[in-house]
Image (cartoon, rainbow, N blue to C red; front, side):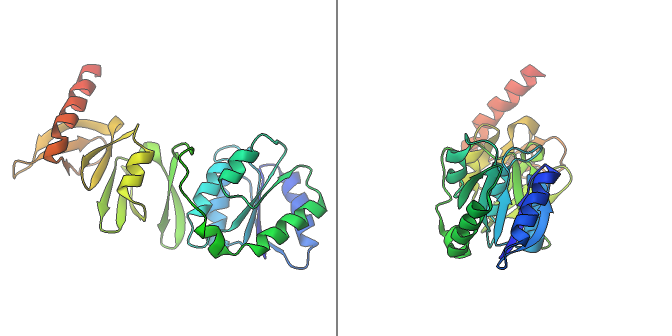
Amino acid sequence: MKVLIVDDEAPARTRLEGMVGDLDSCTVCGLAANGGEAVELASAHQPDVVLMDIRMPGMDGLEAAHHLQAMEQPPAIIFTTAYNDYALQAFDMHAVDYLLKPVRQERLIEALMHAQRMTRIQIAALDEADEDHAARDRICARVRGSLQLVPVEDIRYFQADQKYVTVCTADLSVLIEETLKALEDEFTDSFVRIHRNALVARRYITGMEKDDEGRACVCLAGVETTLEVSRRHTALIRKLVKALEKKG
């Protein structure tokens, strides 16, 4: 099995690397110091198992696990942590096991054997829906075969087109395979529906105007594109614009 090791402390990474290296059935395919690096390395090396710390600067292990599960072939995840108060959250993320530091060799072997019994298909088939998860602060998109993390705070709008959704920021536009409805439910506090095919970030709404055909459109800071507002949503968007104008 290919194993990716993720920990923000170099001695912990080195120790786990040595322990995994002693096992005939496993090879270490990468070392990461935080969740963001873990997602990038997992995309590049396609590990079977990720041994991952939870408390890390930047992207923590729980958020990284969420992104890893969105991969076409998600790895099995084994959390390694010095704290036992994350166990419920870890298993909510469908972790295969939860090892307390310092990790003992016999527990590591047990966890890796468990991971080996769980095929990638079984991992992917686990129920992804979890109403208790907080909204993500990054969206994971596949760009030219690699995973790219887009900060939600930078996103101007989501726009649906058949089975894909375009994620647009001031600097880039990428496609993701998520439904607009699921995105609306997750980001209901920060995005608003303006049309059956579009959600826009409340914080970036700057006004409304009419296009050449007399249709109402919303204007967003940082992008030249204006998006059509359907009749059923026009009153709400006008109300939001007026509220923003008063604040301004």
